[in-house]
Length: 305
Image (cartoon, rainbow, N blue to C red; front, side, top):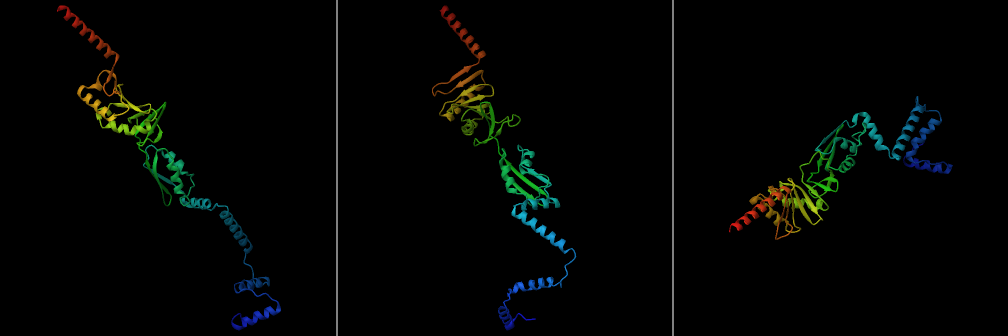
């Protein structure tokens, strides 16, 4: 047997080339010797070797197919779920208007969803599309808990357009339909353009608490000016311009004469040099009767003279 080192290795390679033999690379020589021994019957196969080899081949084929088909995440999640890492608890905080049922539906749990393979970012994006959600954070807490922290939008007013009622934010963005059960104490803005212009106008009226406390609805007329519908049914018609000055004048008249608490139906302040007050039917009749008495008194006084 020849040594494969130093000069003897070179002599062996030269002899092999002259004989026409193939010289194997160094890293293949040991496996080649082993295979030669197997063919010669010098190596005895272990018991159940064929079965073990078949099982290894099948496992390797299954792993390759899983990776090649892109199913590795699903397989890993299924295995981890069945070994005790399935999501068992979901803690939802910060939700008042958003139901936990909607949260669980958007999270997408099926009872076997594993925390290891769960994509928290995708769940966060789905939850962000819920109507009331302003911001949301989804956190995985091992071994089997999911925490969902929600920040909800804040309703500012009720917007009415036709027969539809919607809750809107302070910037005018629509949140969700108004269901009539909650937020009934919010101010109501009505008409085309009221959703966009309403928050700024409501802030102007709020500077006069005596008026703001009496208002039931802010009505946008022709997307140009506002009417105020008071809780007692009185309508205040404001001009297109100089809203703040007109509101200050109205507040002063109410403080001095109790204008808004009188038996009237409307106060028209659209013209800068005059104000028209609409009387109720009872007030109008009383006013006419009073004028007749004054007229009769004047006539009687003139006759005596």
